[in-house]
Image (cartoon, rainbow, N blue to C red):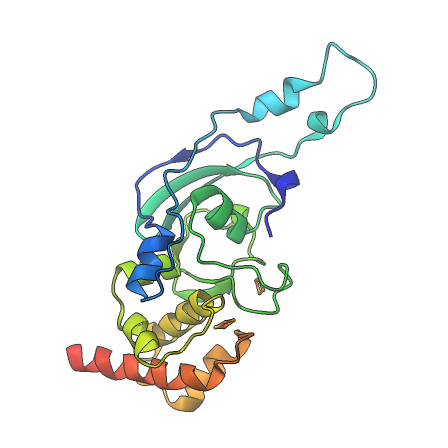
Length: 227
Ligand code: FES
Ligand code: FES
């Protein structure tokens, strides 16, 4: 869940526009449910210095919370082909940055950021990572793929998930799709055991587990046929 307390004293710039709307993702995935579009991201020009200077100085006395605001760190990263530059607080997770600031909402939070469900999985530099346990300030220079980018690129895993009805409510699906895509990038000819092993950290409260291996194996076959 978002933590408003950790909302930024943000001063950030966004470059590029690699994002697509949640509607586009759901539409591509055959899941359109009339969700609101992301819309453009409001960019605050509030400077870090503002929060530090805000309540300090003239009043004297004990320092306020704003006086001890954490140092912001500059992070530049590529998400789904778009370049982004943000000032982040040291305790922000990558999930917070992607969802709450940039607007890629496919990384979910089921387990409260405990690293237990896999619903926040994204691909970072070719590897699936739990974005809830990855600090945003450590992602400088990283290349990130989310389910929005995978859907926008019409990767065969999307159609395979649709063909195999490998979801019910869809909440966990972006995490599964990212994990599966990372597997296929690394291993174009996985066995069912490989798939089950790779997806072992992703949980589904709708219990669609039996449908994921056939979907991933179908995607592997389709990728091979196109090669
Ligand atoms: S939100 Fe559950 S593992 Fe990240
Ligand atoms: S499809 Fe509902 S949580 Fe997995």
